[in-house]
Amino acid sequence: QEAREKILISKIGSFSDDLAPRYVSGLSKALDGRTGSEIETMVKAALRRHIVKKTPLGRALGEVVCEWNGAEASKDQVHQIINLLKHETKLTIREIATIVGLSPSGVQHHLKKSS
Image (tube, rainbow, N blue to C red):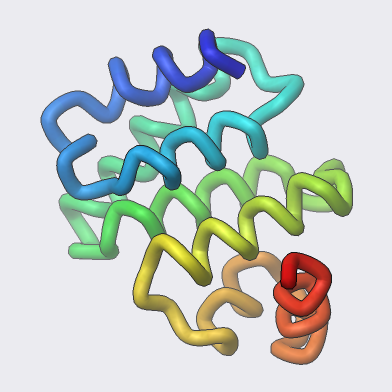
């Protein structure tokens, strides 16, 4: 996890000021099993989305990670992403549901498990 976190910070560069350290740490956990090259590619895609489409960086990273993980994501990874997006961004439950591919009630279920 520490190596993934260092890669994230390095590749996000000066944009890392836009993210809470807890977000980066949590995202590195959700990227378990990904190679450094894959993480770099994801960050580049998220930064492009952030710059070109003016998508907040936290949301852009969440979207890209969910797109890459798709059906391969474990329940734990989905749970981590949902919690990161809810507690470290200003996204609504409905927006998070769209990003992770669940219903709003599915997102609520994950959030209640955290409490």
